[in-house]
Image (cartoon, rainbow, N blue to C red; front, side, top):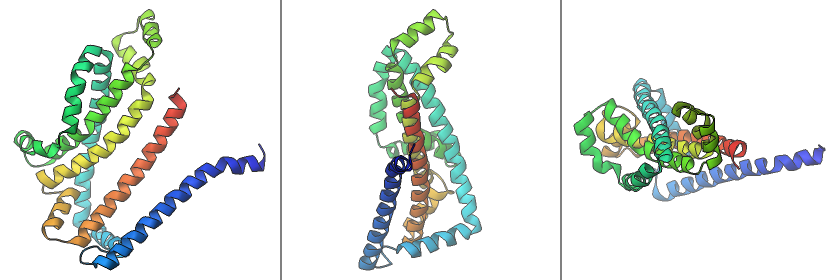
Length: 259
């Protein structure tokens, strides 16, 4: 491969990175302009927000809140991904069950989960369990739906080959259904990751006295704009980084396992 070909091959990736950097610069510039127009009491400037975030992270209590949020999110994510994968495969493999349950799942997915706040509190009370429940409720449905549709679209020749080889249900699950559905499953995992994080934070805002979500709601009550924006910036950075990594993984998986 010649040098010119190598430069051409690198161009799309370099252009995409440049586009992302330009977008970030444009957003920061718009943020700075809005801060100047509205005033720092309404909208803190980007640099001042970053300084406030570093101050918050240096406080000893912040580490405790961050660990609380991270622990709840990790457990909720495991429940969302594993539970969604198993349910999606089962419902996708049994067509009648999938056709009956899909409208129910879509209806539950479109329902604002905050309306279930009293029920979650009644079942789990205040604390870690309620936050995990909120997170899992948000994240598990897209994983189920994507996995179910992926299993439904598996070529029938794979299933006939599995029957001819007399595979057990567990072997069929591990060696046929899951590998053939990997691209769509990864897409569901990416959406489930984001929604689980959102649900965990909502759970902390309404059903906890610790965590990043709790700090957010307390800052709203005291009208601490600088803290609100600092925490929002932290969450945006973490969520964007995770989303980029998962999107890159999704593209690689689609190239590797896609048609």
